[in-house]
Amino acid sequence: MANTSSAKKNVRKMARKTEVNRARRSQVRTFLRRVEDAITAGDKSAASDALKKAEPALMRAVSRGVFHKNTAARKISRLNKRVKAIA
Image (tube, rainbow, N blue to C red; front, side, top):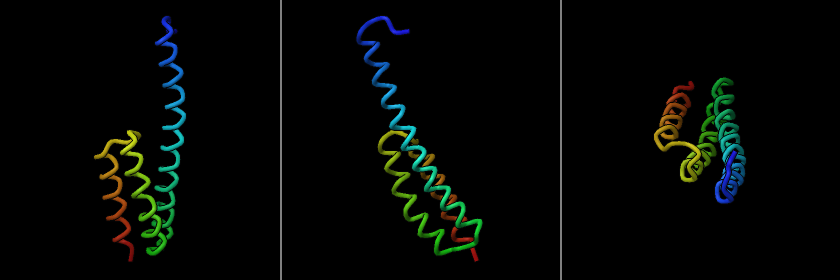
């Protein structure tokens, strides 16, 4: 457990930030799951619409430090490739 008052304050700050980041990560995962569901259903228009909504959400999370830039780029690239592959 933290001993100094500044360390205790940092623990409180980290707890708040963790909650915020958990919510952001969950929101992004929801967007990605919508794309996945549309891909598995074979609906190309729904998949591309979901991807257009998921991409800015993912990059917003990157700018706020929730995901690494390369991770987001890789996810977007792979999803884009799978959407284009739908007949």
